[in-house]
Length: 68
Image (cartoon, one colour):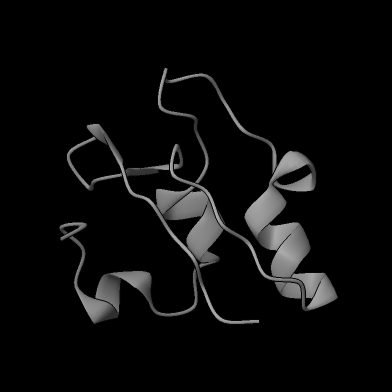
C-alpha cells in the first residue's frame, strides 16, 4: 500500500518515512502529530482526515484508528 519493502523500512522511524506531512502536503512535525501523542499516552486516536505518504511521494488519505 505504501510502496516500501520491509527491508527499506527496517531501522527507520515510520513517522519520518510515511507520516511526516498533512494531506495538503505541508510538513507535520512529530511533536505536533496526534497519532504519535496517542501512541505515547496510550489514548485511542481516531482521524478520518489523516494522510500518509507513498514511496513515490504521493500523499493519500488514510482514516485510522489504531488500538491503544
